[in-house]
Amino acid sequence: MSHLENFKPRYLKVSDLVFKRILSDAIENGFKLVECLNSPEKLHIVREITEITNNLYFKDFQAKLWQEYYNISSKDNNWESKVTKQFARQHNTCRMYRPQRSYIQERQATIVHQKERIGNQLQEYLTKLLNNIEQWQPSIDGTLLSHAINECVRHSQHRLKEEFEYKKEMLTLDWTDHLLLIKFYELKPNEELIELAQNIWQVTADELKTKEQKEILRQRISLKRLPTKTDQTINELVNDNQITLSNPFLDTDQRASFASRCSKTIIQCKFNLMIIELDEFAIVTHRYDLTLSNLKEKLFNLHKGNPHIYTTLLMHIIEERRQAMIQRAVRIRQHKLKTFFDQAPAVNSN
Image 1 (cartoon, rainbow, N blue to C red):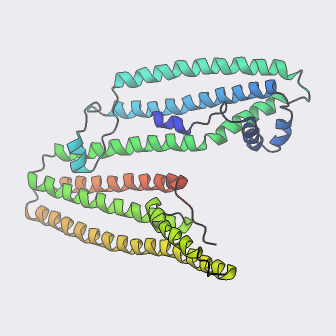
Image 2 (cartoon, helix red, strand yellow; image 1 turned 180 degrees about the vertical axis):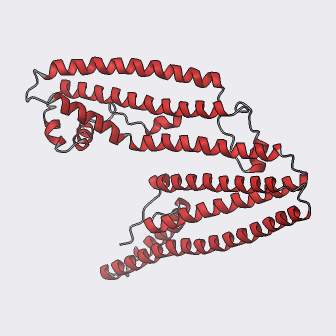
Image 3 (spheres, rainbow, N blue to C red; image 1 turned 120 degrees about the vertical axis):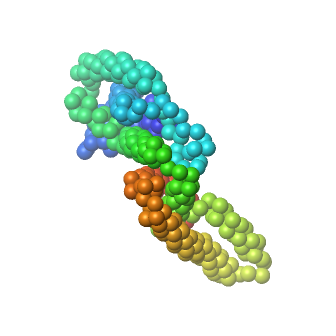
């Protein structure tokens, strides 16, 4: 859970200029408010209040996440049982974090005390602000300033909120996946059916991974953002190009024309490679569909030939778990597509 701290804004670490801009953008005509923060003392107390408000909201997110852990663990009699690496690998599932219920309750109690302490600290600073603000020149509307601080924190924590919501959703999806696997084995399937179910789930997982790669590649092409390895490899051609351009027998116009043509060709080459890869993904996905159809047909024939062993309930659980895998993979894909390109290099095609 510590990685979520990385998405938390740090108002005491940014420059005065950056902080003023953030606060100014939080409300309409915020620049007028910021103009009144014309001394280091005024700016310092507003910074402190913003950071404390930020900490309080962060604790709210933590409390909701731990409440989700508590809710799910309360519904699961096997909550504290661990999934082995081998089981997770064989069934294409995750080894989700399953803290003991006593630890969950301990964390909840700690957060309650932390929120109380931060709330008291915030109240002290707000009281100090309201006492000082009466002497400030030019004058500032204290209510408007408090509103601006709240809006500033709320807007800046948008990404943090998304990460917490994603964490909560994945907790439920991971738990549901484990629950369906438990239900499957509680029905006492024989070895043949276990192997067949694992094959169905493996093909499903492989196809979902391929679809994820394809969608990321589509978005790369759309946003003109390239895989780092592809970008670096083809950029080596640029170095060769520079050697050619240094030839003294090229005049200025020839050199400019040659450089422009080479640059456009290299950029087009990069995207042509990705389009070819898209075609490859389409072929692979089609093969997965065929394989999955054959496995499902085999399962149906087993059920048809011996419905007492290969029961309808077992067939339904296998498919239900497969659908849960799809739902989980789609949510992961959505999150990756939304956050994947922060570090991806952009290409100027002009």
